[in-house]
Amino acid sequence: MGTTEAWKKMREVCVIGVGLHKFGRFPEKDIGDLGREAILAAFEDAGCGPKDIEAGFGGRVFNGNATAIRLISEVFQTGILIDNVEKACATSSTAVRLATWAIGAGLYDVCLCVGVEKMERGLVGGVAPGMESRASYGQLMGLGIMPAEYALRARRHMYEYGSTREMFAQVAVKSHANGSLNPYAQYQTKVTLEEVLNARMISDPLTLYQCSPSTDGASAVVLCAKEVAHKYRGKLITIAGWASGTPAYTPTGVGGDVQEGFIAKLAKEAYERASVGPKDIKVAQVHDAFSAGEIFAIEDLSFAKPGEGGKYVWEGKADINGQVAINTDGGLESRGHPQGATGIAMLVEIVRQLRGEAGLRQVPGNPKIGLQHNVGIGGCNIFIYKK
Amino acid sequence: MAEAVTKKRLPIRRGRFVVPDDPTKEPYLIASRCKNCGKVFCPPRHICLNCGKQMMEIIPLSGKGKIYSYTEVHQQLPGALVKTPYMIVIVSMPEGCQVHGVMTEKFENIAVDSEVEVYYEKMMEDKDGNELIADKFRLVSPSKK
Image (cartoon, rainbow over all chains, first blue to last red; front, side, top):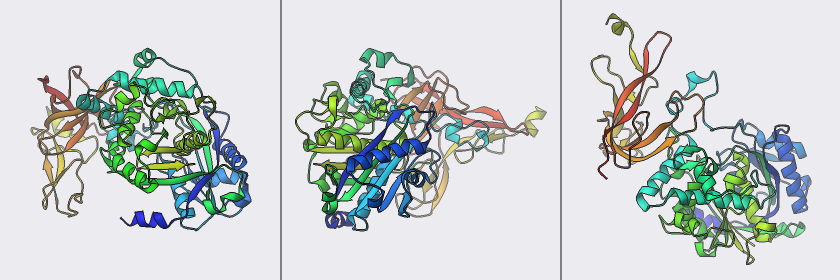
């Protein structure tokens, strides 16, 4: 398609500064407090400030109206374009892609992206008290709940490939071990396989520890054209390739974001654009909203063959010292999943790993190429980063 | 049965199944089939995703199918009328589409390829006392696997 040729003509875009507000529960803070801290951290990291930013992109999933405008206005109000973005769990990676396009096309040199969320406890997608008359069929009948989406595909995976509930549980063991090494993670406690398997069942075979929590948090990134990056002190990480798309939509919301074969096709496109293959990837942040999601991603991204993702995790190949270190910051399950902030948080971790700034969870061997896979209802964004 | 004459059975939400006006007739799940290319869609839609034509006809589904996948849900969705534990199932229908539904009874022994059939149950009443019904699935026979 035409997009491949257009991509080749685009300017190279790189990350020069990243920042997070710690993930967790912060009832005393509002989204402005969370976003401000992440933006200021990204500015500090990049060595830039409000006067450098030519456009802003960002958002939030729940009550998302004008979120990006509000967050950026916490720090500065210089009259630049600010676009609000929403794409469920892929919201802030979508903001990054829009900024990448805008810079790549030569419209701007430097852009700021920000994502935030403050979440209620419990399942998302339910009916608020008093709103029953507006509930959909799926809501009334308990269909279309997110852990069940992943559980249904997990159950089918078990049937088709013989993967086991222990393999899905091992994803959570690994993510919690990684999260225990990340001071920004919501959960910094290790769990054993037995603890994961014996935890409260949410949607069989997925137990509590295999489900991402509800989280408050914020993330921010400064992107710039590579040709002007020398003006800033931030250590450059280049966006070497990306691919994004929207799978089939279903009115019940069932199955759309885990459609078979769809993400594998996007991954191939991203690898081609970045002129790399799955074997070149040393660190990856993938969408483990539920543990099974990491196993599907391992297969979709061709780190393992279809059906062998469970075995891949079980054998330690996704560990920090494995073949591809996956979800090194604890992933969505342990770092936390403030939906609007997750996409940029994945980027932040890849950047820290490629810069060698990941502390106790640093992937050994000086990793040079990393991959991000962020899935939401409405689409998937894959980015490949190089140093 | 004077009451049955005045109080109707109505679908809790429209578009998924049809309740015949004749109370002696059973409700049935519906899909749409493209008259141009034959592709079947559930839930029904107006424009064919296969050929793009707007030539859909509503067809009844037999209501019997095989389990494609399933999960037993233990976390209550706020506001849902179905209470945990229950099973969410994806049922492959012989008409060539899949239906997502729930099982609320005797689902302990279901497996992929188990044969299930639809039935209808009163979920609540509206302000006029009409029964608002929804579809559920139940096991036809244990899986031979």
